[in-house]
Length: 354
Image 1 (cartoon, rainbow, N blue to C red):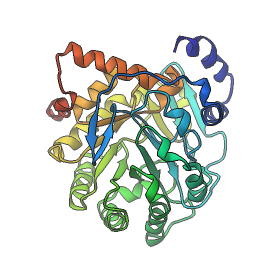
Image 2: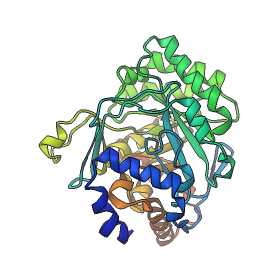
Image 3: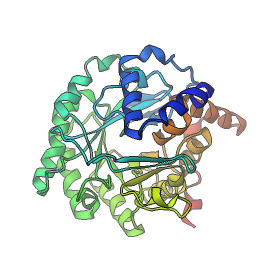
């Protein structure tokens, strides 16, 4: 980690954010031997009939085309979420489309689901049975798809093509960078979409939905009701935010897109706790947003998350951020005298409702 901060990070930060990202994906995909396998303590949890050796995973967005999962699985993650993948290839939004601010450890992106499509993604998962951790697949619609029935077909297409390769699916309806996508979070649209997808997917493969952090209390209540009524298997909270806290540099804040990083932490954690309380802890939550340490993971678990994801933390802390977070989490749990960490999931949720 120290070598990353002293040598590798300064080099990567001389590159544009997207070039640096592509370099990291290339190295993890083609030079995995450069990344010694991390040794981390086991903090197991079983969800959806699947064992996760630890609760710290990689969020969607890093490995969009299922290229780097072999290298990523060496870094200490308890699970990986790949994508977002769309049925057809698409270029995404015009470049530049990723911006970073080191002073606040923040990233703004307006990628727009660039990728090579589901067929290429499937090819990238050849040999996935050798992956030592569960693999989730985050699915989205193509930008050109606008009619609701066609949108449903986009998601169905991904599920049908990739169904045998996913440990779970995540329906992405919350990226702010695809026109009209967040409208799918409305009660009627989300109910229709999830009802259709629950009928198509294999009953053995969990289906989750990923939501935005910018929802009102009423919108979150409606989503909780829809997820419950459709028997959706879980939820990911949250995607990036359109909010721009005052501490952001003015030029950086002016960029369009979704904000991720440390400044999203509290907002996402509060939403996790609200959802956990609304559903009485009956629906598993994967927590994401502003996670870069074991303390961050611990906070989200106590708020209501059964699993937690990292992405932006990799940019500012380094590739072994998950391994460090798992070690720190293990130390916190031991110091608190907790014998079974799964018993503290949601223990603080009521505190966030005050």
